[in-house]
Length: 316
Image 1 (tube, one colour):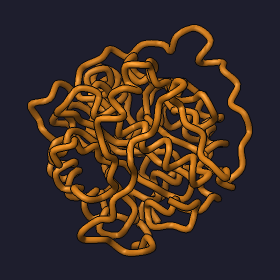
Image 2: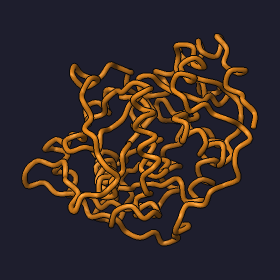
Image 3: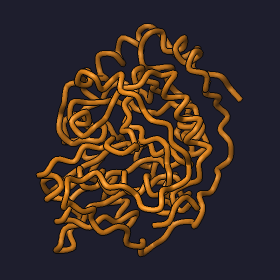
Image 4: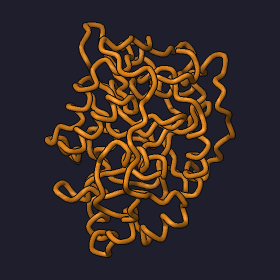
């Protein structure tokens, strides 16, 4: 395999990536622009309780008294593989050691640029705690390892659901993989502030969806219309959120509530949101160090895939 990250990481790329990260991160898991901010006091150092891969008998909800989760999960009319299919291995090697990543990043967030977007390359990157995103709206694909990293804790109380959001939950039904193309198309709308999903990125994740590794979680209204949703990569007990959108108020947030319920029911360990933007911090996202993220990642990858995503984890 070819090692590429050190050869392509240059000071010029680092400077370019640093300038663009605030613009691009606004499009990660939210449709509206947000400046990158530190998590509120106390969140960054918040202790994450240890958990196991075993699902609880009943997944705890995150709603105020009297609240309820939306109905979940309607079978896909065109189901993918019952188990995710492992693609041919990548010819590119990603360092999985956070200390090596720190050296490659040179104090920044980008460890390199180039390589390819083949399914094997994408899976190797996520398993190493790295994800692709262009360095600028028209830039080459760069490979990112933010430090700190944004996650939504899956422990009880990790996701914050306000009373108004709890009321919105009752207005939608959650479905999985019933409208993946429509979800990624909406997330790819280049007219969105901070839009970053290129046709190449979109095609690459569509291929991973066909192989059973990328999934959409969708919020549908009572009239049967897609109101919002999100998509991301599911590997074992890891769900790496890529983007979300909404057409109706709170629909993307309700999709996130549904996703957390699915992950908790399966005993999943890690919900990666890349950066803890102000919007995501308001929903409970916290920042963890690169080293802590990789410790969580190792545990998550050892867990079974949630049943809702084609695995054997939990019961949905």
